[in-house]
Length: 335
Ligand code: ATP
Ligand code: FE
Image (cartoon, rainbow, N blue to C red; front, side):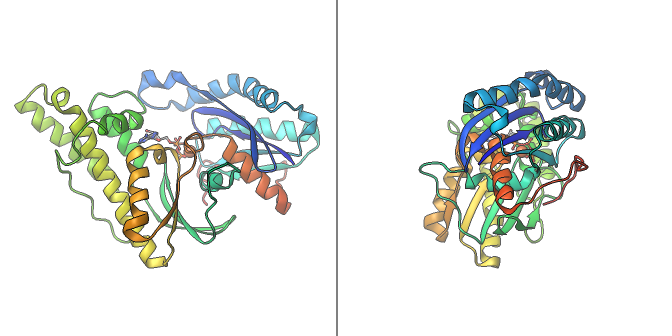
């Protein structure tokens, strides 16, 4: 079974072809334009998707070494995401499926971040049901109880900023480029995580909050800079290490509670922030400390990609779960 997956929810235009769950191609066109603005500009993202989508899909087919008449279905991201961006992938997928007279399959981007664990990949185990998935990305922070492929419940989520935003906004305060997550990660390895202490937010239950942390960091940096104008430059690695340490502490605390509450010890992470080396290490440590079995996806399947859309397409194809041509993009689609 050959499935084409198309992802265009934010600022990456991506297409992937998979054959029975194995990746044949996984193409991504990143949009550089947003770096100048320090964040994604929706209108520019939409226009760039329009320019990229045809060549990206063509490249995905070429790399997979198949022609489009071999495809069994077209899967696409229906939401959540930026409306203008989603519309490009949605319209394209609909037209292609219609033209080829094959099934169209809509995919929830957040489910896809979780089900990326089911991509056939040597050396990577698939989590058994039920498991807990913590999705940590630029737009979301969720703990999801996954009972089966399409039976999942969000049991905790952020009440304000997403964890990726916490990284990116902290980075902005420190004068780092966008997105700042990868650079904070790199610098954190060279710094002392206990150099500076930031208080963790108190949020009931399994929910998260990150906006207070960002403000705390802002005031802290402003204060210290008054005393030493070169405070940021002099301490950048230590500041990054301390911020990352605080964020990871918040995430692991909630995972511990979720695991205790549900009695589930199979823990998976997904989403762009799961590329973070600190959270990967903390999860590994959880295996000894809490008896967890943990699942971390291959690096390229953590940030936005179309392979995760294609794998969900494949799983839905097996269940005969197809979409109508009248399906519409949905910016706030829920799990
Ligand atoms: P969503 O999936 O919620 O719609 P998104 O698609 O924008 O959001 P992703 O592409 O999954 O998000 O993740 C992007 C985020 O991941 C950015 O905030 C980026 O800073 C963060 N990120 C990427 N690599 C790292 C890293 N090594 N450490 C910390 N954060 C990282
Ligand atoms: Fe994403």
